[in-house]
Length: 142
Image (cartoon, rainbow, N blue to C red; front, top):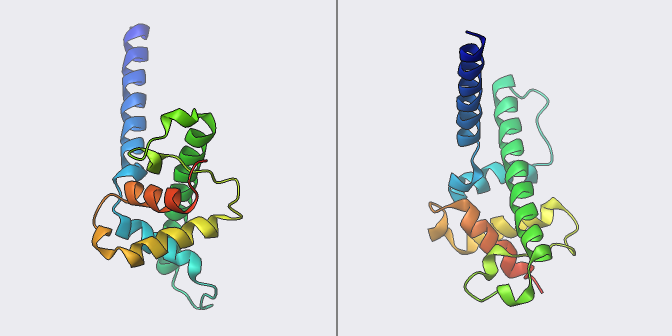
């Protein structure tokens, strides 16, 4: 009986973790969602009488943007550092970026927003793909 309970609890725990990971998968967000979330970082002043619901919505957007930027930049930079330079071809260059000269996350956010303004026809496509393209074009892996 104890083994059955243990198996059921492990399966239940796995399902909950899978559901959480599936809901927070940054690779599925469209570029427009990422840009909208990151625009909150550009606001410098907030009214003191902001409604609580708006405050929590802005907070969620900020966390979404920062989590996306940190995940993407870590992935691109790690791939560049651990790669052999022969592995980088023109076809897969957008999956590598040398971010050693980037001063802040604002630089990365600005680059993604500028890319979306320059190419608005990509707004409904996968954000991870186009954000990595924008970053890797600005800071290519050397």
